[in-house]
Amino acid sequence: MSRFEVVRTGASASGGQPVTQKNPPHRGGEANPSAKALQDKFSSAIMRVEVIWGETIVYIDPTAVHEAIRWLHDDPSQRYDFLSDVTAVEYRDAGSPIEVVWHLRSLPYRRFLRIKSQLEKGAPLEVDSVYDIYRSADWLERECYDMFGIRFTGHPDLRRLLMWESYKEGYPLRKDFPLRGRFSRSEQLRQALAQNPEARYSMEELTIADAFTDLPPDMRERLNKGERTGE
Amino acid sequence: MGLTASAEHRTVEYVPESQEGWVATRLDFLVNWGRANSLWPMPFGTACCAIEFMATAASDFDLARFGMERMSYSPRQADVLICAGRVPFKLAPIIRRIWEQMPQPKWCISMGACASTGGMFDNYAVVQGIDTIIPVDVYVPGCPPRPEGLIYGIRMLQEKVKNERMSDSRTRDEIEPDPSSQLYIPPSMIDELGEPFGNSVNQTRSGL
Image (cartoon, rainbow over all chains, first blue to last red; front, side, top):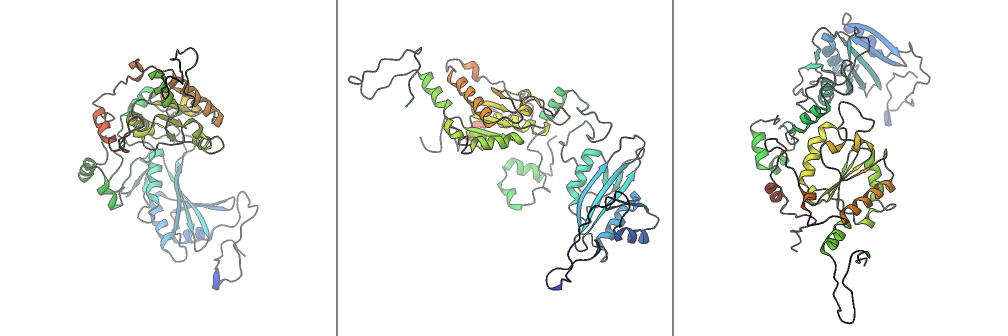
């Protein structure tokens, strides 16, 4: 039985069990059939397909990524309904482009697909947000923006997630970022202590309507005015 | 009851036949004895040190022996801030505010290498020792410290508390932060906010 066969359970079970591939080869091996389907559908935008340790990686042109992921999500023959990760990779070689990586999983078809898109360093690091397809992309893209400075166009609330909003030192996971940051320790501490710890809440984040009435009146007033941060 | 001063403290002689029901002692000694044996910790656990702290509070090591079993999850009712774990810069204003919210008298234990010095996290995100933000009384080394190590630090803090003098007000002096900063809350407002609950020194809730 193939790894990529549909497995039905319960009354409609055909007797097959999910197959876990043992000892996959480093390169080569059986590719995820979605890669072939993508090549048929978006022939020019698919740059190459690799299978490494049994996992399929599809390199897609940055301008076509949103369209391809939309198709993978919507098409009944693919049904990639779960976005497990959005991240980025910067290589040590200064000339090589930054890669944005999407990890997609299709629960009905038991498929895993890794999509990569290469952004050249000279140009602005911009790629379309997949927030309109997967809501889980919200914080994943914010973290990616926070750490690498990649702008996801179309994201409704693209601001820093891990570092505080007034963080001025740049993007910590970039290769040109010094390990201890750009500023002195005392300057870092001064800037960190100057943030307002209560100003993290926005009306978008306070989704439970009841919580709003429990807030202190001054904070309610500030939030009503649309204030996001006191910085 | 253990309510006896050591030999170098001159106590009034206690003659049971003539002074039934009276105990005489120094006020300093009595207050410090009470404070040292009922330190309510404010646990600020951010990393693996907090796991050791939980083990210390659990029955094997039993922090209740030192009157510390009552974890104070509100800084308004806490006496000792135990910072267990690394503190990133994003938490720096929060631990500073928690410290400011704690009523006097208050103490601080920095538990573990990361809280004391930043430890192995000499990077852009981690505060290099919480003593750059708040005053620390006892540093407990270790990565993480064994519960015995934390208890040793607590006993050291108790010794420090027992040796304090009420007449020496400098030990409780606080330098207020810059009033123009957003971290500043005037003490009057801190009292007003804490008023419904009181603190370990002044319990307003029980009506006592």
